[in-house]
Image 1 (cartoon, helix red, strand yellow):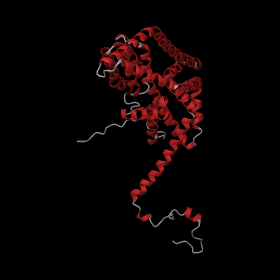
Image 2 (cartoon, one colour; image 1 turned 120 degrees about the vertical axis):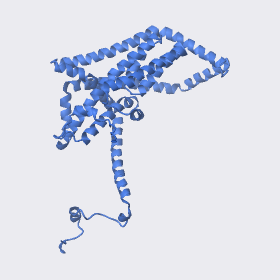
Image 3 (cartoon, rainbow, N blue to C red; image 1 turned 90 degrees about the vertical axis):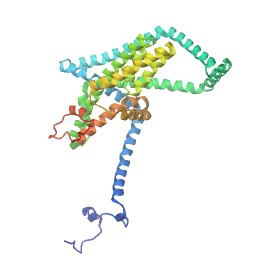
Image 4 (spheres, rainbow, N blue to C red; image 1 turned 120 degrees about the horizontal axis):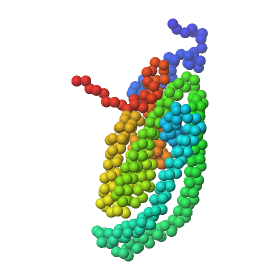
Length: 397
């Protein structure tokens, strides 16, 4: 049925109402369908990438606020199992908060005291071992394959000292920057403590207020996806804490029995480095082997390397599968890429939070993709840490 002749044609109102009227050109019919689909995907991808870029830029600009917030969330996830256990056993909330926070501060203070105590106790022997190692290295340069003379070595040392003196202004500015950084760390620590207290005291109320920022129809999906992601973060933090403790005890005891100095500081560094998967273990293990090589010789360094590799193999093939199973499992290649990308964007904090953030996004994406918030879904938030790992399909004979 045709339109009446007296009705105006070509009006904007009619173009909006009649979906069959689209803007075309003489080339529309000649553009391949594959190119049109690729173009549609491309401009949408550019919009998403621009949005992600703006979000990363805002995070970098507000890093003094974002980093304490993420640290507080991670510490809350570490304390959550113990905190909720106390609440379930009718411990008053204020008492549970006090026990959790004061206990954590006491553990951190105890570790720092042990590090300072051993460094102060072994400083003289470490200094003497350092002098001996330098002399041995000097003799190796003279008697080894390089056949350097004492005068050449002294000239190289003099050039190094001159370079340091020439860069004195840069070093001084770096020291001032370090002082500013230490001030930021102190302020960030206080802010993290305040946020931690708020999360433990009224985390549920804060989250309910946050969900009200979304449209009404989107609130069930946002709430369900975030709760599934929170279960994942708690599982990740709890498992990483246990694995880091076992790694630190294993490598620390190995260094102690092998006579490597500063065994407690090495164990503390191993504990902290375990929270940066793969990369942290490699660097802290290399540091332990280097100390053994410098202060104890190549044979002790070789045995220290055996201890480090043995502990890491037990972690990778026994502890992680046994304690975490397929929960929060991310392929090692993805872990390396995510940690490297996080370090490139935000340095050490980026490497620290890259893996839990990636696992959180993974769980949230799977939850939303399955529309698990709908009443007909049989899955709960606790189930999604076990369903984010693709399982190989069985090939029928």
